Amino acid sequence: MKAFTYIRPTTAKEAISAFASAAEGARYIAGGTTLYDLMKLNIERPPFLIDVTAIAGLNEIDINEDRLRFGASVPMSAVASHETIRTSYPVLAESLWKAASQQLRNMATGTHPVKAAVAVARSPLV
Ligand SMILES: Cc1cc2nc3c(=O)[nH]c(=O)nc-3n(C[C@H](O)[C@H](O)[C@H](O)COP(=O)(O)OP(=O)(O)OC[C@H]3O[C@@H](n4cnc5c(N)ncnc54)[C@H](O)[C@@H]3O)c2cc1C
Image (tube, rainbow, N blue to C red; front, side):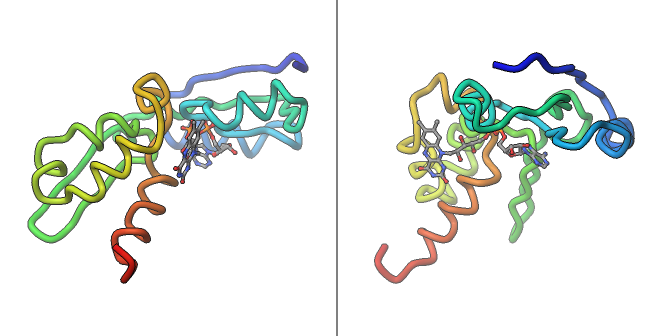
């Protein structure tokens, strides 16, 4: 794996400005379950990683009467085990439980799989 610089900013402004001033190929990183694998295989060789998991507000799940909102750093396990999601959105919770092992669910952020789960839940085949 190629050497890289790693930072973990606490504000979105700091993260965006670090990305804007970084060398080409910089990447944001959350749980790393995809990106670290690609780096180990030398498919991705980012010189600079900006970890978004400490950014305030990105780790929140916000549920209103008719709206679910997930921050970009919310781990899959937090969504899958959330009591309201388990009771009111069981297909979503179950999809995430089945998507990976507990270790991976604890690391991987949910945005991409949540979108996939919602697409599946809306499918006429389910
Ligand atoms: C065993 C296993 C099973 C899986 N099963 C499924 C599945 O059933 N369905 C499915 O949809 N996916 C599946 N995946 C893929 C899964 O969606 C990703 O591994 C996970 O969502 C990536 O989250 P992460 O936080 O680890 O992302 P990372 O690896 O940290 O990042 C992935 C990419 O997103 C970018 N990124 C991360 N955060 C941000 C951000 N805030 N803003 C902009 N860019 C960002 C990174 O630069 C990188 O390019 C699986 C993966 C594994 C390892």
